[in-house]
Image (cartoon, rainbow, N blue to C red; front, top):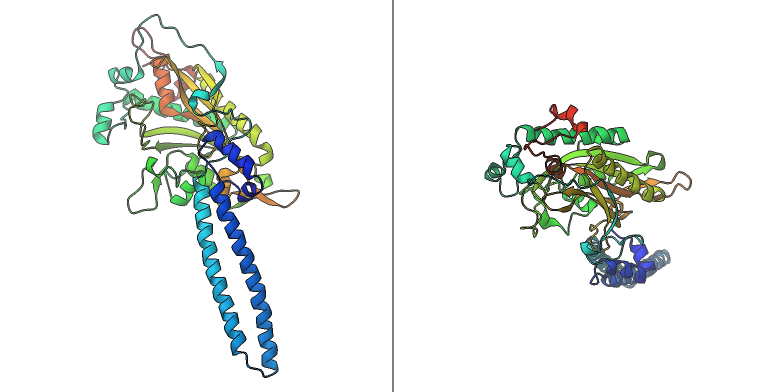
Length: 420
């Protein structure tokens, strides 16, 4: 959530930055409400001062034996006016908060300006896409041929875009999860296993609610949602708390299944494992001070890149434009893995810096060790990596002419086999 003080003091700059995302975005309505709130607050303060002054007069009049009915009636009227104004102020507070919850984060000055993913900027590539000397197959065909994923029965058990992993497919998926967690532990992340459901307050803290309600699965008659990413519960571990600066930075890594309805994305990448409603992911989350935020973001991105390098999967790094970054992010690096079946790179990790945007929503703060001042932390997260997409990339990139699939060497101690 944007800082109302920042909006109040820099309205033109905030509007300019928001329009880098979308020309239709504006904080004008927020400012209008804020001006009315402040005007009412001034009136309330003046009325309270008047009520105090008149109340003192009542005491003096009573001491001198004079009648106080008229002045008491006036004081009561002042009290009624204060109550009405305070109720109006609460109404305006709620309206303002609702508006702020629907306004995205402002992009960082270093985020490329653009309207969509067409304006994203490729900054580097690692590894060379393999040139096959045989007719390669898409991962969905190999999964069916080798009984690694039973797409048909996954649909039968649930609905479209749910999958049933089987045999070595299930073992490969589990191996990738274990590999990521072990590597992130080595990198210095604390492993956590959070709940796979979160309440509306937690969902609001990271920006999923209220704007993206239709993209989530909700438990009927309960204030619980299936999480779309481990970012949601892990970022909120310290919601409503004040940490000491010595506690920061905090690095977490968490495996969870992720659930996304992805309303409106039908027909886009819906074959195979690229875009499904339930998938596994290992997420990295950081809480840090504003001063270390940019450095921690780069470190986290490098940690995700290392996973791809260890697996020997060709990838590219892309700076997302202002029109393509996530709702709560101010800067984002996308890591995209080479997928032969698409003849291009596909997103496998988004590493985002949120500044204090999520921390304001979730009220996550720390106390500065020098000044004692309480301020908001910065939050950062990224996939390390999306597991299903990693499995798909392994199957496609390491298939052989005889139909076998070679397992990357770093995974073999987890799978127990070196090929499928």
